[in-house]
Image 1 (cartoon, helix red, strand yellow):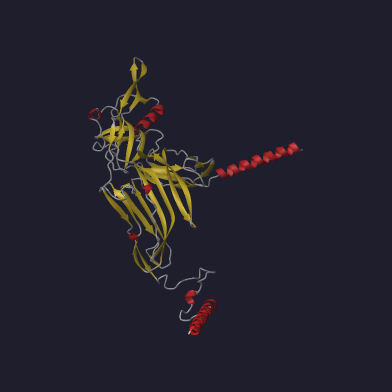
Image 2: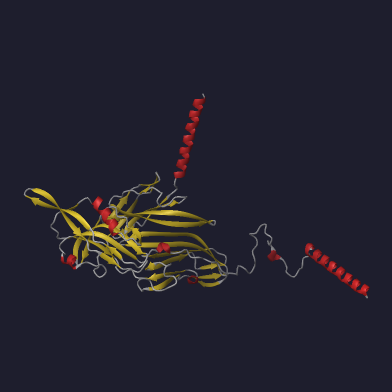
Length: 473
C-alpha cells in the first residue's frame, strides 16, 4: 500500500510540475497584418507582439507561415513599451517580410502563426500587388568603386560587393549587397556549386567588425532584373545588410571568390567545369561628424516627423492624445524617449513608446513612435514645438538639424488653479479648504493655549527679575 501511494504521489508531482512548466512557457501573443495594398518594390508584413515576461528577443521560438505567390525575405525585431497605471509593460515585436513573386490580387487563406508551440490563426484576406515604379538601377558607379576591368567585361558575369555609400558619416547607415550579375545575353549555362557551404563563409569575410548590423535576413538568393550602366542583368543577391559605423576607422571589404559550375558539352556528354568569379575589394571610409556637444548622442540620417492629436481645440482639464512617429534611414532606435516635464501650463503623461527597425525596398528604416497624454491647465494658444522636438544630424545638408512639432492647440476655459479642487482628496487634510472664508480666524485650542502659557512664564520671569533687583537695593 505504501509503495502504491508513493507511486501515485510521485506521478502527481510530475503532472503538477509539467503543468507548471507549460504555464511558464505559455505566451499570450497577438498578430498584426500589414498593408494589403503594396507594389512589387514593397514587402508585405505579418507581425506578432509578445510580452517579455522575462523573455529576451532570442528566447522566444516562433514560426511564420509560407504564403503562396510570396517569398520570405527576413524577420525584423522591435520593442515597445506601454505605460499603464504608472507601470511599464515591455513587449517584443517580430515582423516577417514577404516579397511578392508577381502582380495581381492574391488570396491568403487562414494560416497559423506559432509561438513557443502555441498557435493562433488569422482571418483570410486578399493582397493587391501593383507593378513597381520602374526598373531600379542598383549600382551607381559614382558611389561604388567598380574596377575598369569589370566594366569592360559588360557581357560577362561578374561578382560584386556594393555599398550604397563609400564615404558615410559615422553613425550613418550604408547598405552592403553581395551579388552575382549575369548579363541578359549570356550564352553560358551556369549553375551554383554548394552555395550552402560557400555563401556563409564568404558572408563572414565581408562583414565589417566596427559596425552595428541590421540584416535583411535573406534566406535564399534574391533574383531580380536590374540595370548596370544601361545594360540589363539578372542579379542573384546572396546577402544584404545595413551597417552603422561606430567610429571613423577605414572599413576594408576583401576580394571574395565564388565557384560556379559551367556546363560544357564534350561530344554527346555534358561536363561541369568549375569557374571562379572574384569580387573587387572595397574600401569604405567613414567621416567624423562636425564638432558638437551631441555628436555622439543623436541619430544620423534623413528623418521625417509624422504627428497627430485628438483635438486642436479643447478646454482646461480635458485630456488630449498626441502621437509622434519619427521615421528615417538612420539607426532610429537610439532616439531617447523625451524627458517630458509638466509645467504651469500643461501636464504630460507618456502612455506608450515603440521602436522598430525594418527593411523597406533597399533601405533599412527606423521608427520611434510615442503616444503622449496632454492635460492643459491654463487657457491660451500653445505651440507644441516648444515641447516636442528631435535633434539629429542631417546627412543631406551635412548639418545638425531639428524636427519640431507643427501642431498648435487652442485652450479655452478657466485656469485650473483659479479654484483648488479638493474633491478627489476624500480623506485629505485640505479637503474643502477652498470653501473657507480666509477673513475668519478659527480658534485653535492647542496653538493659543501654548502661546498663553509662554506669555505667563515670561511674565513670571520678568517679575522675579524685578524682585531680585529691588532686594539688592
